[in-house]
Length: 335
Image (cartoon, rainbow, N blue to C red; front, side):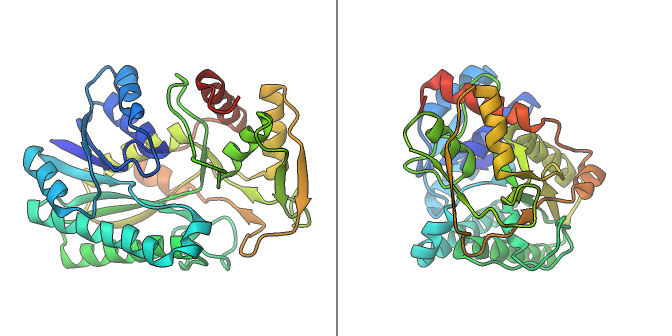
C-alpha cells in the first residue's frame, strides 16, 4: 500500500516525503510545479536512496488522479497541494477558492471512487482568526480574515462533513504554525519565487544584500520587544508530525484537528537576533506601521498532538536558523 503526497515537491511536502520514506512508507507524489522545481525529485532520491514515483499534474485534473489511483494501491492521502500566498488571495479570491477548494473536492471524489478513506490535510493556524486568545486550542471557534484562510476553514468543514457521511473515513486536520528551517543535508529547503511572503526567507534575502532591509510591521504590540510573536517550528519536526498523524489515522476514524507547533512564541526581533548569531551577518531593519489583520501573539497549545500522536517538536530556534542558513549557503540561493 502507498501514500499519495499532493504538492510533494514543495517546501513542507518534500520534507514530509523524506520523513515518510525513511519511516518505511511507500510514497507517490503529484505536483504541478506551480511553487516548486523539478530538481527537488533528484534531491529526494539522493537523500532517501530510493526512486521517487512521481506524476506531474494538477489535482483538479480527474484523469491524472484516476491514473494514479489505478496504477498504485493508495491507502491514504497527505494533502499539501494548494495556493498559499495571503496577499495574492486577496487580489485573486476566485482563483484561490477554485484551486484550493475545487481541487480538494476533486481529490476527495477520486478517493471515493477508489475506496481510499484516509486523508491528512495541510491546514493552518490562520483558521483561529483574530478573536481567540493564545495559546490556540483545537476546540476554539474558527474563522478567517482573507480568502486563503477561508479556503482552509471551508476545507476543514468539508472534511468534517465527509466523515459524518462515511463513518469509515479518517481525516486529520493539521493546523500548522510557522515552519522554518531545512533538511540537515542542505539539499532541500524553502525556495520562494520573487519577494518572499514569509519572514525567514525575507530575512535571508536581506542578509544576502538582495533586499536593503527587513520591514518590521509594528513595534508597539504588548510583547517582549513590541514586535509580533509567532510559533516557529522546524519543518522536519512538522514533517514528523505528518508521519505520526498517518499512523494515528490507520487505527482511528472520524475527524480530528491537531495543532503542530512548539507551544512557544518568538518575536520578530528575537528571530532576527538568532539569525545574526548563527550567520555572523547584521540584519538591518526598519520599523513600519502594523499590517491590517496582524495579531500581536500567535502560538499553539500542543497538548493534543502529544496525547493523540505521541509527537512533540524537538528542535529549538537556533537549530531552525542554522539549518535555514546552511540550505541557503550550500545552494547559493541568495548568499
